Image (tube, rainbow, N blue to C red):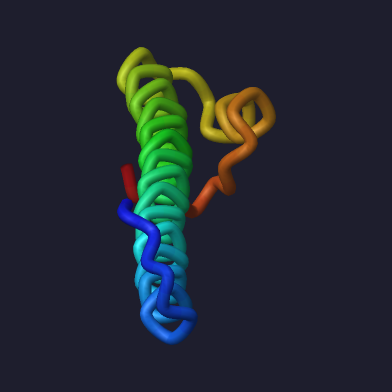
Amino acid sequence: MRISRDEVERARLMSEYKYEVDTQSKVVQAKREGRKEGLLEGRKEGIREIARNLKATGEPLEKIAALIGLSREVIEGL
């Protein structure tokens, strides 16, 4: 970035620079939040898959609920 000797121009350029930095920061933050949400959803799906597998093997729903931490109603719906 070229620095101007004109104070008004310099202030305008700094304002534009700060805007760009803020915008980039928001994009990075949004990506981090999206990644966290994706990881959480992946974990939830993994737990549901394990519950489905246990249910398919004939394990009692109460035992699956105790092991996995899902309610009996949720497990019945899998």
